Length: 114
Length: 114
View 1 (cartoon, rainbow over the protein chains, first blue to last red):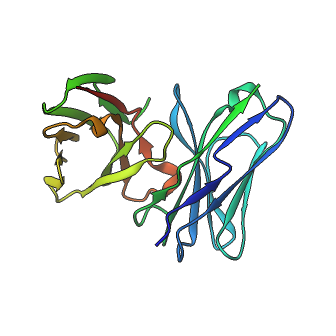
View 2 (view 1 turned 180 degrees about the vertical axis):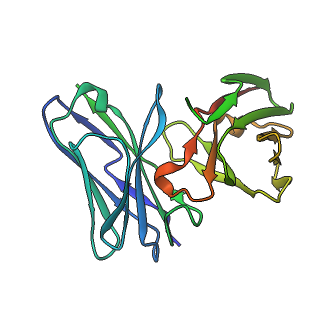
View 3 (view 1 turned 135 degrees about the vertical axis):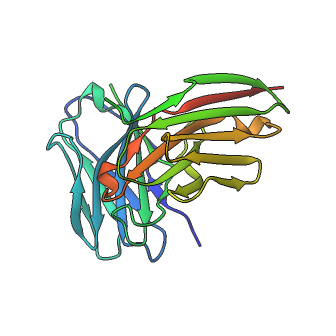
C-alpha cells in the first residue's frame, strides 16, 4: 500500500505571495491532518479534515486554510506569505481521525519564504 | 507551558553503544503515548504506541517504557547504528483529545558517530 504523498517537496516563495500544498493520504484513509514544523516551535497542529469537512483547527491565522476533496486528497493554502511561514509542512492520514487511531505522516513540503 | 518535556535536548553517541531518552508529561487524563523517529527533512515515523496499562513495548532495537503513575516514559536504543541518527519525538494524547490537542514534545536530537 502506498504511503502518504505530498507535493511539492520543496518550494521557494517571496513575501506576499500565496502557496498551495497538496497531500494524498493512504488509500482508504478519510482523515487528513496538517502540521507546521519549525526548529523553534516543533510540531504544531494546523487543522484536520474528515470526509471533506474541517473537524478541528489549531491556533493559526486565517491566512492558513485547507480543504479536502471527495477522494480524501487534501490541499493547504497559505495566503500573503510572511517570513515566519518558512517551515516543513507535514500532513498525516488515518482511518478514523480524531486521535482514535494511528496516523501516518508524509515526507513533508519544505517551504522557504524569502 | 508545554505539557510534554523531553530530555536531553540532544546527544551524541558512539556507534554500537546504548542510549536512553526521557519524556515527562503532565497530560491528564492520559490515553496513550507515542514515540516517533524523524529523519532530517522527512516526516515522523511511529516507533511505539503505549496505553495506560502497558509498561514496556519493543520495536526491534527500540524499547519504550511507561510509568503512568509518575507520568514518565523512556525510549532505549540498543546497539546504536548510524541510521539511528534522527530526532525522536514523544507525543501524548489525553483521553478525550482529538488530533488538535495532541501534546508534542520538542524532540531529542540523536547523533550516532562511527
